[in-house]
Length: 166
Image 1 (cartoon, helix red, strand yellow):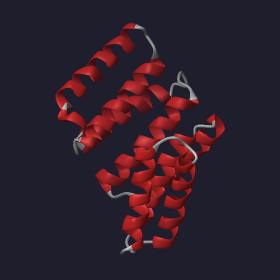
Image 2: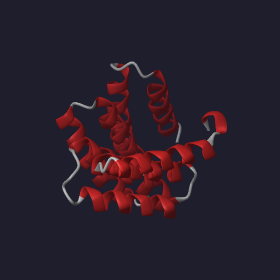
Image 3: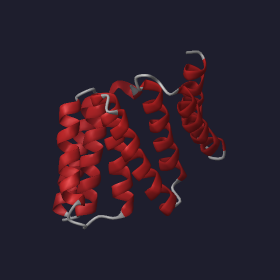
Image 4: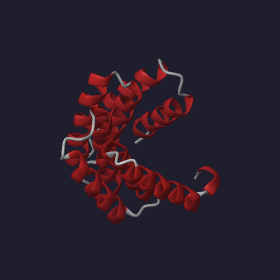
């Protein structure tokens, strides 16, 4: 992990949650909860990640947030379904929702991350669907080749290599 500052990350999330509540910003509170879910995904505590996604969903369902929040929610929900629950059809469904929103918002990074999630889901399915996996990974690569994100591009290329050598 970057700098191994897991505890500091958690403390910053708690601060973000507190400030969002103080400002009475449903949008920022929902984003804070999505960030908490991502934190718990990265620390492999998927039950806690699920709880924070439920909190975010409760706010989102009131209609008091924007599409950017919804896109982030769908994207992280997909990642947690994939990594924490091996629910690959669910991963694909939420990633496709995220892609729809990312295209509406012209958010290429979110679109590429969601394409990558779909590639991973097809790779991990039983039986794996490698051709579909390659197709989605390649779409993510194409986006990141036109962006200035060498780390994301390197990750997507690594995903392609992993599937090619299976």
